[in-house]
Length: 397
Image (cartoon, rainbow, N blue to C red; front, top):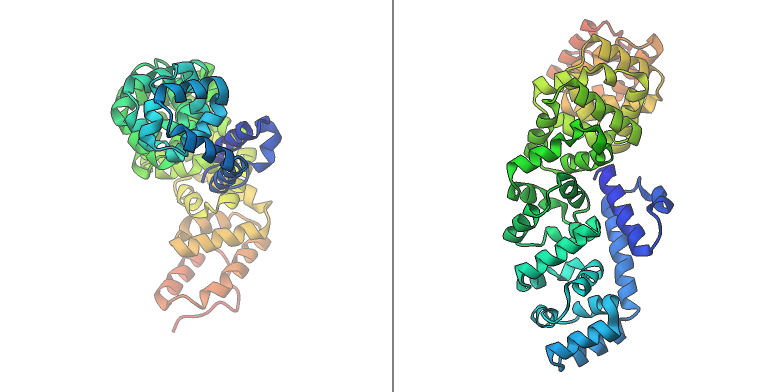
């Protein structure tokens, strides 16, 4: 998963623990899936500490009239205990009690409610009541709670809710905190096309700069087809916009999110993007290679290098020349798996003799495993790029 997904999980975890996300920054490099499971385990542990009390109250509540249970919730239990109690009651019973609860109190419950057991409840509550709760959450700028539940809502409710959110920036922040990321594509398809386009084009607005990482998060978590569609929409806005995205990715170390998006673009757009002057700066290429190493993106990186011009490959070779040989080893292995020899060897020929020899040393153990046709092709490429061969290099029959 992406670095931005991990950032969203850290923010959610901070809220659960009642601490600033800054205090949990050391967790950002962990996979978002692991952080999600950790957060869920903590939530379950907190619930288990009061399970006997909650179960006893649930047994009592089942016998009370709905209006009396609502009074009990408001004036004795409070929002936190009521949210936990709701998970122990049938959804139809919770929906019946909710009819007697004011919208502000229902919103407080929503902030604390576990979404794992709320899908049936959301289908039983009146759409008007849900819309009121969502509007209050929006007024509170509680995008975390909105993100937890929006993927569980019926499509009609999502459409109605979106129609009452005039600012696409709010939509982007809700999607950033969405709990069920596999539902992102569906939610985007539910929303009007023009709204999604306006949201993407906020990268043209420097005043909305804080939202750019959230836009990139949407791109990073979309499916391949949607990633390409939305990415090319952004790329079509011109070099000024693309350079702004590059600077944002560099400032916030978001290359592991951005590289897969670029790799999804059409060849023509990829060629334009990878040859931006802003991408050929040594410091930028260093951060890109670090992200490539960290997330195992060498196949995507070599595919992009295929479209680099001379200046870009020279710049990339200069950065690789200063890198550890372990980075070259993983690049060579990716080229072996995906047959991306041309970009790798063209970059390798620009390295020092010692680094070129290091590439050959790395390749040597793999060469004996190749079939004769592939081996012959590789030998021809080595000769074409003027890279000397080791004496131990196998020969064809």
